[in-house]
Length: 408
Image 1 (cartoon, rainbow, N blue to C red):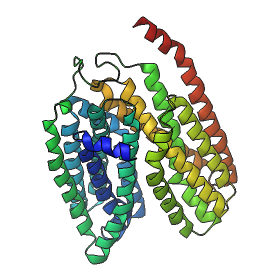
Image 2 (cartoon, rainbow, N blue to C red; image 1 turned 60 degrees about the horizontal axis):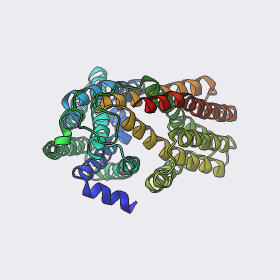
Image 3 (cartoon, one colour; image 1 turned 120 degrees about the vertical axis):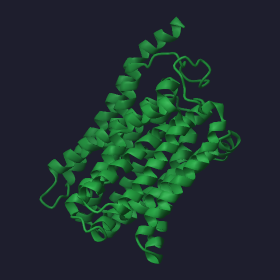
Image 4 (cartoon, helix red, strand yellow; image 1 turned 90 degrees about the vertical axis):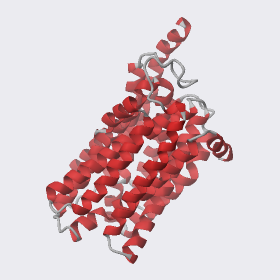
């Protein structure tokens, strides 16, 4: 942990990027947890309209991340990050001014699009600064730690603002945070590494795939498959687990489980990735993490408090192992001038996995909307299947990789 912080401190621009991600997470979570309440109580919109608006926001951010990555590749990561922040700042102000279903849905779509621009650009920026050495994975883990810390602090700040002032103040504060951060991030333009990468640039990213090399389609497809599997499992924390917990235990336990997840992710993110950094096979780590998630789903099927807590803890370990591995695989296998779009593809693949999982949960849910024990046992089988496919398919790619190295 200390070595990672030292690396971030001595590499110009890295601490600013990590602090920026923390600020973005804080600002977003000042409003987002209370957005549905604001739209229904203050804007007097129906529950159906609010559900549509929030769904549009999610799919705009995930589904348009490919477009956001393309923008980052064309204008450079700094310009894309600042542009994405300004789009998000504007969208919060539009949500305040919106007076009907269509303007609200449009503002939520714009809010998601701002995130679709910012996220791939911020990841691409981090790789441009650090290259693709062994330390990159732990710095990605540190980035996730900053995001999760901000996600924990943001709701507390939002609730304080709700207590002290009008609900609209949170929107203005978040918008101001994004505008101020966009201005601060412009300082990164002084770093030549943040010029928009070109396909002919042969000096970019020491240690990664050559800037002029073509994208390895098989490797990218494999990484996107990992992202799909991760999204399929990860979404259970947001839908199936809460409704199942509420049906077999007290609904108040849901908040406790989310708190356990947030604390576990913050505490385990960097140490776990440092300890597994010696394992060069990402397929082994990702497959093992999926098996841990599958074990957690088996524990959840018991329906007991201990089983649900064990599920969240095992889930958290899997989460912190998979996410940085996927990002580092993109960093090491995709040329700089295509990396932003590749990060965007990852976001879309995660969203696709989540959509399939939610569709399966809705199909198997009871009349009350809750899933049963059979659903969790099915998830165990699916997780094991994902782990097997990911590991075997990675082995199938080895002969080509070996042959490619001999030809160099």
